Length: 94
Image (tube, rainbow, N blue to C red; front, top):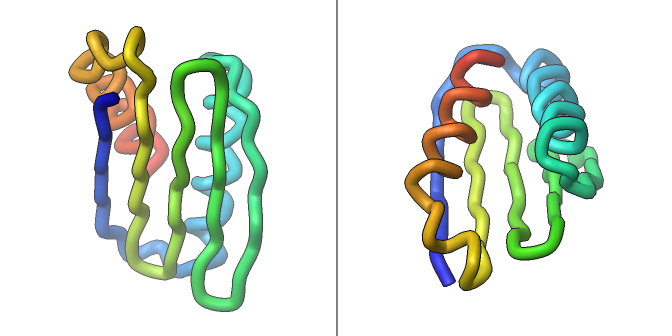
């Protein structure tokens, strides 16, 4: 298994960061056929995502995004490509 860990600081505040996270989850569902669930918390929201061969979370706070994903054996071979695409999508939203 391969792991992906991406962290991004921001100055959006939690309300705006939520909007970005919702948009990211929508894109993940449409573009990558992910199943996403969104849980709002007082100080941190959590987007959980899964599909065959990958699962992970995107933690959203007032000043950071932290994505952690585990890739299965087959997708592990494409870790660099997948990580590059995630970074590109997240950075575009920020």
